Amino acid sequence: MHANGTQPPEPVRRAWAQAIELLEEDLVRRDRAPRTRRAYRGDLTALAVWAGAQGIEPRAIVPRDVRRYVAHLSQAGSSPSTSARKLAAARALFTSLREHGLLAQNPADLVSTPRRPRHLPRVLSAGDTSKLLDAIAAGAPLELRDRAMFELAYSCGLRAEEIVSLGCSDLDFDAEQLRVEGKGRKTRLVPVGEPAQAAVRDYLERARGRLASRAPRAGSGSGPTAMFLSNNGRRLSTSDVRRRLRLWAARAGVGTGFSPHALRHSFATHLLDGGADLRSIQEMLGHASVSSTQIYTRVESARLKSAYTRSHPRA
Image (cartoon, rainbow, N blue to C red; front, side, top):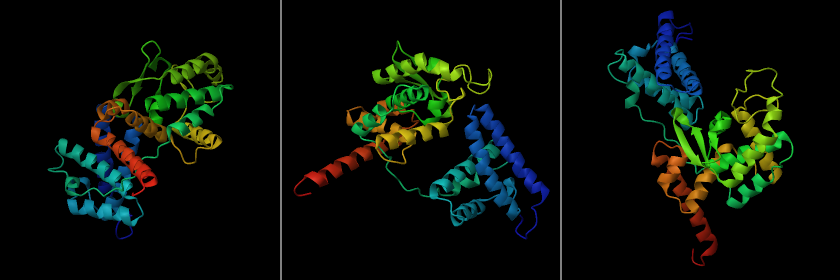
């Protein structure tokens, strides 16, 4: 609604829709993933609704308006991380308009990003990781799938999206490495440990064909080469992966609230504990910058401080 309680003028609504569509075309040209494009569109639709209610067109917006929008998000209950993400989407939109000659400068560049609290990632101990993986039986097709899936996720530090995107040919058993397509469609090769290789081979030989045969018809969603399939033969979703990990974590008694990212964090932390250097861990995780990887040094520091406090007589 407009500030006076009426619908914003049609030209304002149309201008925001066109601006968002222009960014969408740019993202397609840059080969950004569909999930990324949907996220941008969702965040920018919220901005368009707010700005439209103020009667502000994209080409007329100024830094003061962007600050007001960020304040509006906070007042509406958005967390600092959510506000920061939506501000980043706004920056991308205005950058697109500037590059197309529709804005002289990016008004969001002059707006400070909301400060996000720095939380240390949740990490399983090596013992609890083994307890979790060993708790997954290797009998029924779904058990074989889950054992292979989570062994591979921990062995290679995979994101949930990377797990479900894997194809059967992505694991090279001879080279003992996994081809992973990460964020921004960037491909990396990650070494694979023997337990993960054995679990995946067992799943492919004994379970995947049985799951694939349950698909209602060819081309119904699993794709011809998807590695991990659901009970009805379709490609898994990330929510399926999260749900199954919570199930096995509860059965193993290693705690609640774990996500696939906990295995990814554990992978990185255990490598660091074992003496791996940050640059190598950065490459295996697929981080664009080593600064993203440095959080694991804080995990290690926190662990050492805890051990010192517990053990030193004059801590």
